[in-house]
Length: 422
Image 1 (cartoon, one colour):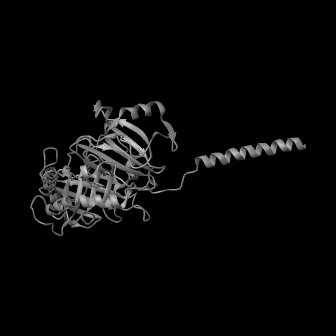
Image 2 (cartoon, rainbow, N blue to C red):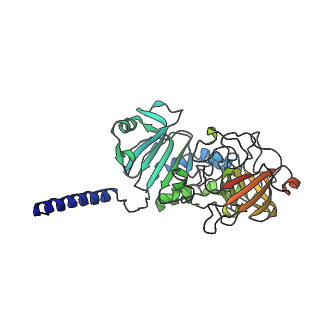
Image 3 (cartoon, rainbow, N blue to C red):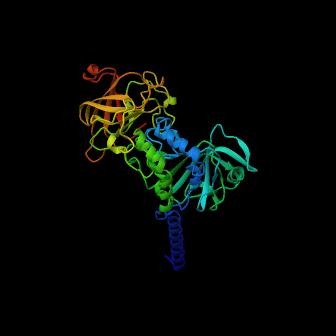
């Protein structure tokens, strides 16, 4: 090999190596950094009606009298009791009476996700706006603030359509500096969600579950400064005291984060695996089967707030020792052969946390959409592996009387798993 050829070869190797190093450095992930925002994107004084005592106490009194839980100023995370958002909402609903300006306390990149069907163009405070937008604000590589059902400046929407740039892998956005008004809330309800890719609500090592916002959604409370957290707790204290007087609210605080799943028990979120349903594409519009009864939340009463949840709505009496938890089934799309059950107290009749029979009774006045009468839930837990709960199986069947529930499972039983496969 002559010297000239060797030189060319060495230069070629160096070029290839240099390109490889560049690609590695370019694609190298930045270190994880927790984002803590020093201001809420919307006026907390307005959200909690601190400037309108009449309206503020109207909402608080509704909470105390259990007229409408939607009168919470901010409906708490994770909200496992919202049955057309099963297994949980994993976000904050914020209720308002007026359109409030939205601005973020830090520089971000804004990514439009979609507009809802009822979206329209309006003029607000002299500016052209588009209503009912769902927007992602990338706070850094790992953490995203999602705002949903907001009204956005049309100029920003136009800029995104023509000038968005590629950022953070395959994500796109436009640069938005801190403290500018990007739009407004509605005059009823919006929701905000934090997505943190280093946070997991479900173990994604099993069954290939991925891509869902439910996996990485985190409690927004912990992504704000201590000063913001304290303001939220102080402003919400009167409503929390009203919930304590009511005794009917399983969750009423903003600094609560917990896992619904419990090893060795039937407590947890359960996804449909097998049964006698005849299903079609309308029953699978999300990441998982999405039909009535296709997801179950079975919540240990000890995971609820015992200061605000201690009373049976039906009797007005405090819970007895046999009230062990809360049951709820998904309220999505109708499926032949199933009647939506709705939110229920769980009163133990026989068995243990792995197999037995429970009487499930309505947590409030049963409406026409819910299955009427007494329901006896027969269940049996099958733990597949010692090292994980995510391949646990749960058989359930619903009976109209206790005597039938004491018999064997029938062809009407359903099989659930802790992490969706389909």
